[in-house]
Length: 113
Image (tube, rainbow, N blue to C red):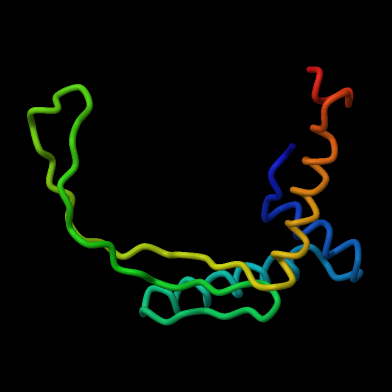
């Protein structure tokens, strides 16, 4: 299964709307820039039916190097971006898990591989 890239989005939207690809790219890039800017300022970004991006602070903690477990590695606190899927996205993704479950039932061709 291939990943969806920004370029793929540009081509799809351009084909669906008839807009010039460069114009679509500019809109997508500016959207992403504004999202990033808001998150960098600590603001949550809510996109209805898609999801919410939030900045959360991770506490400082002590890690261990598995190759040298006797040495503690201090991990400083840091800000991370968390994503919580919206209702509509959850519904669409749930269809994938149901499809996978149906194909993995005993006796199905994919379950035998």
